[in-house]
Amino acid sequence: MMKSLGITNVIVLWDRRKGQSEQLKNRIYYNHLLLVVVAVVVVVVVVVVAAAAAATVVVVVVVVVVVVVVVVVVVVVVVAVVVVVAVVVVVVVAVVVAVVVVVVVVVVVVVRLREEEDDDEKG
Image 1 (cartoon, rainbow, N blue to C red):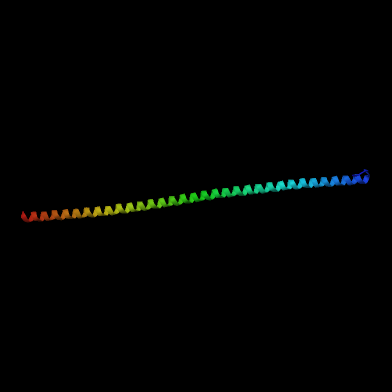
Image 2 (cartoon, rainbow, N blue to C red):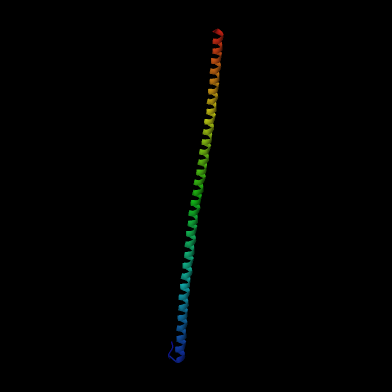
């Protein structure tokens, strides 16, 4: 190929090797840069997926809490309605019993008074 290694040939060879060395450095630099970019993208994707999973868990927990609160409120309202109905029934029964007692007492008093009047008229 080259018969003589003159100073010009040595400089040309050195320049070629230097150029190859620079290309190799550039390739290594870009490879490292690509690795860093890929690593950053992977980290971002993992963080986004983890945040989405956490948000999903939070949403599920909030929905469960809301459902539990609604169920508790419904149970409390139903119990309150049952208690109010029970109180109304007790009051109505008490009023009916009181009316019956009053009527019975009045009837007994009236019957006794008539008996006493009849006894007074006979005696």
